[in-house]
Image (cartoon, rainbow, N blue to C red; front, side, top):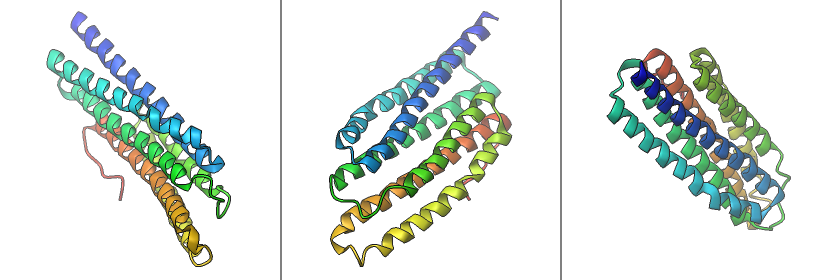
Length: 219
């Protein structure tokens, strides 16, 4: 009984760190698009500087998982919980990287006059943010049905991504001197589309956690 309680406590610590890491990634993601929209160079630089904190959480969670596996020798469901947490941790770390990439695009654009107001990109991000929040809820509650519903929304982000990039390409003939800015905005759309893909991967791991089966939800 004491052994089981010790395992549960250690697993809770691992999950708590994972959710703290996710909170940081969510803030960085939101702030990165705010920095882009307002061309806030200082904010963008701060987001890039803070990326190491998310990476530090990644290392701590991986180390804790290794210790947990080595000391407790978990099997079946308990092992799936650890493996799922590790995989989800990796996806969150990559989401943090996407926030950093958006901030870097903001630095590339700098104070150039924008070819158009940044309006559609925040809408696209809003869907990805909702997906991430619900995917984490599905993980916390071990809800495979919710995970599947969240993954289905990836199509919404893909559709917006396609429309936005296509629109941005139409600006090139009229703004030949702003190709660098147009490219960075297209990159930003791509980064958000990748966030939704990483969230979909989180959903796959929730389903693995609950059922023990692997599903490819990115198709």
